[in-house]
Amino acid sequence: MPLKISLHTESSIPLEVDSIQLETIRTQSAEEIAKIKIFRGNEELPCGDFFNVTGCASDDNTVVWEGNLHKVKLIGDHLSEGTIRVEGNVGMHLGAEMTGGEIILNGNASDWVGAQMSGGRIRVHGNVGHLCGAVYRGGRKGMTGGEILIDGNAGNELGHTMRRGLIAVGGNSGDAAGVGMIAGSILIFGEPGIRNGAGMKRGTIALCNPELTPEILPTFKRASNYEPLFLNLYFKHLKQCGFAVPDECLTTSYQRYCGDLLELGKGEIFANAG
Image 1 (cartoon, rainbow, N blue to C red):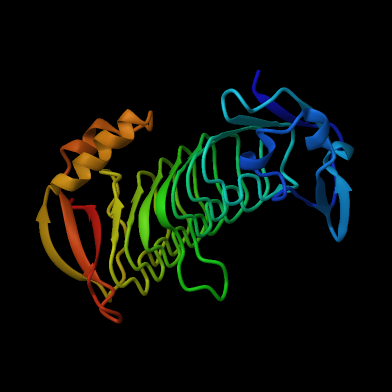
Image 2: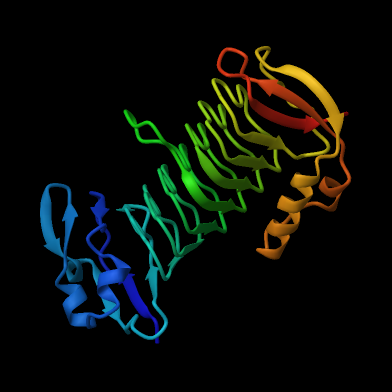
């Protein structure tokens, strides 16, 4: 039986649960986990005041969070191995700074999903807020590795200052995807926002919807029209992960734009050649 942490008492003040680390709790009993202190505002309170804890993670290295968790922050923070499954909507900083393992969310997430993560995979069967895979304010590097796969929509500044890794969005995205991007890949299959790639130095943004011709910033230079092989490799990988990729994407020609020419100009945006 996997370890289950179920919310029994909701809080109007956010709960910060970064003290509940899978690497530690997998060897602990349910009673010990219930005594771990979490933050509610500036108070430290036992986890058991808000959550029921059952099962054990020692066998399958898995923890399941359940309930209306939209006020619960930092689930999976600094995760390095194992699996976290979240059943329900969740608060900010899901999987922030994780280095390995996998997080599966069956619901929607708030802002800062996978912020500054360097490894592992976050699979979201729903929508995410702003600044997914982004750098924290005042930092220098956003996401530096791993994968974030989102079935639904994403907010603004997706992959802000991203350095490596893959972000795929099945739905629409907000404004300024890949702003300040240094490297890595962002694939958007729905309708993108505006100012994508603003200030990017390197990296790839693919606007994959074959029915849309999105607006490209004037600081990007039109380069060529072709069918990039590496995008098909990404699409096949995503399909293997259970991510919905329209068949038309595999045969669509893309227009390549180089930029941002206000920076190094070595980034690229692919858009429907139509």
